[in-house]
Length: 92
Image 1: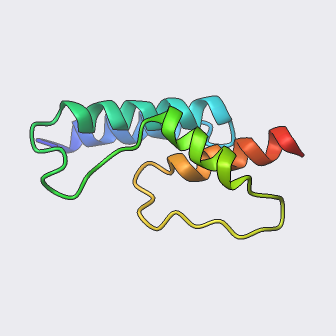
Image 2 (image 1 turned 180 degrees about the vertical axis):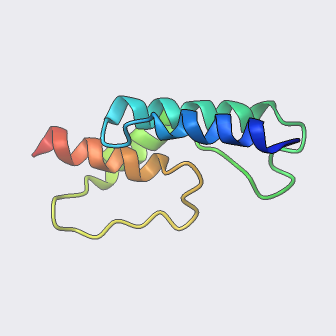
Image 3 (image 1 turned 30 degrees about the horizontal axis):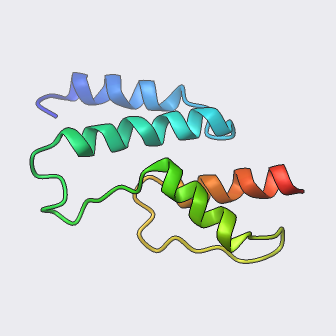
């Protein structure tokens, strides 16, 4: 950020996001992934994203259950964790 005013505006926008809402979490992740994709250096700094369709497929195949431990060691945008929460809610 070039100045504190821009940073404050970003923080204010992020603060408006309801991270308890599945759709808002996914929207936030999608925005972040789009930014990474658009950056020329994306991937050169160890920043990668997994498309949502792949994330959903992987979570569906693992089929996590309520009470099990879930780990997403990279946890860039939290996509796997968000999909896992949705999967457990839908199958519960």
